[in-house]
Image (cartoon, rainbow, N blue to C red; front, side):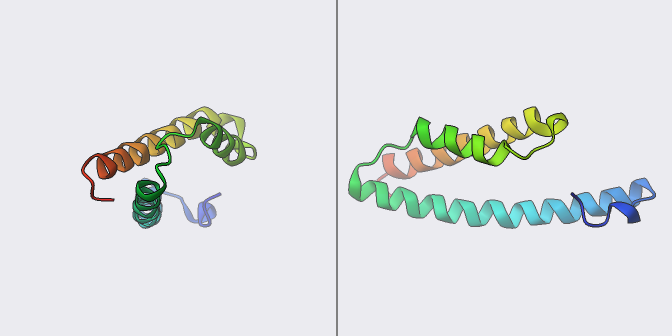
Length: 99
């Protein structure tokens, strides 16, 4: 999972890896939010709904299919929170006419 697991010997090593992963997550989050902004713009023109339960379920099922059971519940929570943030952002953009 983490590329440098064998290098982690101390708490400091683990924290450095967490910092690296956190930076990767930040980059991925910002890229995702840019795409969500584009989706809001498209939906503003098409009138599409912010929430699509079938798509959300399919996405969660696809992304969790290969997750170890010990992490699956937490990962599903993570995905649902990310989706909630995305939907809230889309709704805000559409409601403000900024999309």
